[in-house]
Image: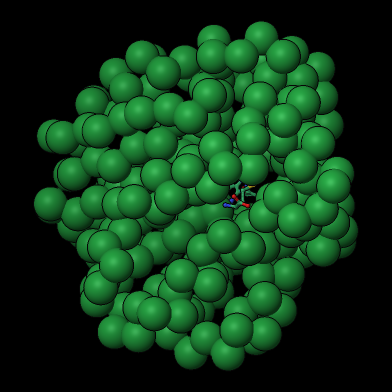
Length: 226
Ligand SMILES: C[S@@+](CC[C@H](N)C(=O)[O-])C[C@H]1O[C@@H](n2cnc3c(N)ncnc32)[C@H](O)[C@@H]1O
């Protein structure tokens, strides 16, 4: 199975178990809390610090065009869009099952400023310089073609636009690295090769004039200006 097919299949399966996934990703279940601590080395408080940092590049009163890719089930981000009433938000993901779960979550929140698009980050259908913000939470470590993803994200971003979000990085916690190598990569929810903090910084600097990067354990959070 090729890497594109492997990750597609993996997330189609995750999408079918979206309530389990959402419980883990919001640390609202015992399994989620255990996995956070054991595999990611994070307490619930540290995890929420990480989420705030991952979303820090989106201004609280944002009013332009925003692309979120990959939205996954939207469990972290959709609740925050409720307050961005003047923004035009497009949420994209490769997996129809993840997108369907995101659409269900958006319906529960009665969101009217968000549209959903199925698509590959490596072949975006938007014009050059289209978005003021591109948000990618936990996308770079999953995307099968990292160069195509970075090229496309930068292409659709306006000059002075912001690329922000988060990604797993190696070299911060041996237990996390072991888990990623022997589980996440194998089942296909992550796609190697993975960056470490300094190589991710260097890669982002190839595309953006200003890069702010920090980490909460094995998660790097970044805010970049084109
Ligand atoms: C780790 S999840 C992150 C989702 C969400 N941002 C979150 O934090 O819960 C990775 C997502 O990337 C999506 N994905 C994988 N390859 C993709 C691609 N080439 N283009 C767009 N989305 C992709 C998967 O379908 C999955 O929903």
